[in-house]
Length: 290
Ligand code: SAM
Image (cartoon, rainbow, N blue to C red; front, side, top):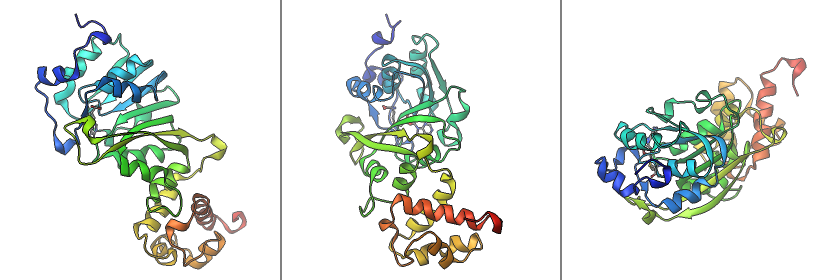
């Protein structure tokens, strides 16, 4: 009898029953150990509404439901997984909804009116960073917590501090809206098939509203310019952006109190905020400028 979540068959059997094999092009590496998916799910649930990206055979999906996610909406691009996921839907008492779409084209904010949402995902490596940047820069923010399994190297970039070689665009964007920490590492051997590198589970908790930086899109442009050429001094790397905004680069850097010969990895998050704020003030009428 499979009429409860607890009675669903082991994930290995689910893969076999539905003839499912991993496709490299979709970054498919499955977590078949439900103890591990339970541990991840407990970082996101209980919660009223959890969005999952890439449920695959549904291990984390089951764990989220069992950990007390009242509702789960799971976005899966690969339609081969739909029958296996349907088996979970059939025992989930209308708490699980599956969407067969590309998460890169799906704005989670539009999937539910409930706020705040929570996102929990074992992200496909090839789209993980892009999705994270989309969610970090969403305006207004629609989530209170992101629980994401990422390549360990990417997770380290999210929580890196200035001066560290992992410090860059991701750390500045993430630190401008959330407090992040790595909860635990997952060795490559825990996945089927194992990827080439280890993973880590990262938790990002949104900052109180008065501590969040307002214009993440502009911050995204500035950090893309600065870290796109991270070995160059800011007076070189930010030149194209100053030109786009028709402002004088030296005036901009002086106003933001940034040394033009500095390299981006030495500028702390507050320094990038000053760059964004002063750039905004140049675009305002003269009597409104800071
Ligand atoms: N959550 C499952 C687990 O932990 O075993 C599978 C994780 S696997 C690393 C990534 C999953 O994301 C796969 O099911 C894959 O088909 C799906 N996926 C890949 N690209 C996607 C996209 N653009 N949108 C939605 N799902 C995607």
